[in-house]
Length: 115
Length: 119
Image (cartoon, rainbow over all chains, first blue to last red; front, top):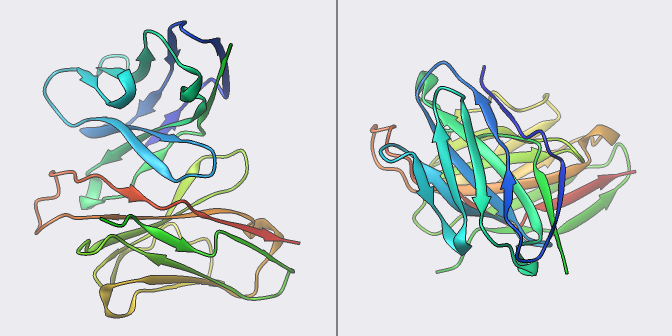
């Protein structure tokens, strides 16, 4: 069974500082990787996804992530955060074992951007 | 284009009562998913519909949970009788994937969730 680990439950950062949210997964098969964001009182919104090709993936709102197969990681980064980036971020993986479509999520990382 | 909608947004019920959650997917999306997040834990898959058929219900916790998708449009998730551990946020998602080419990953669009509190 696959799993997703987000080691940091909360990440405080000052506005305009860089941030990295860590995600590691375990899977013995090919996977697709995703980062979702949940703003307060809203649903999950897709930030970016890795399906194949270039290991550096760019998403919305200036976020990017790098797929590292050898380290089974998919860390999310932003060079300069804004107060509006305060939200909860979820890493998710989808594999194709048995033709499944379900997403397996991490426990989420709460990003709090402070002035 | 309207997104995935869920009703109600919040529900507070007593242990032993019944609650029905509803999800309206994006029009034309054949795939509908239910997920649940218990407070402080990960979002967990419950089940997946393709049109009106249950494709995968491996995540359903027990037989107190009943999901339906009559006519392949909206879906309901009924909890009967509710227990304290059923409290959490229930998310619905939909996606548009055609045919059997499973490696084409279409985005799952999520609704805002229903926060269920069982007291």
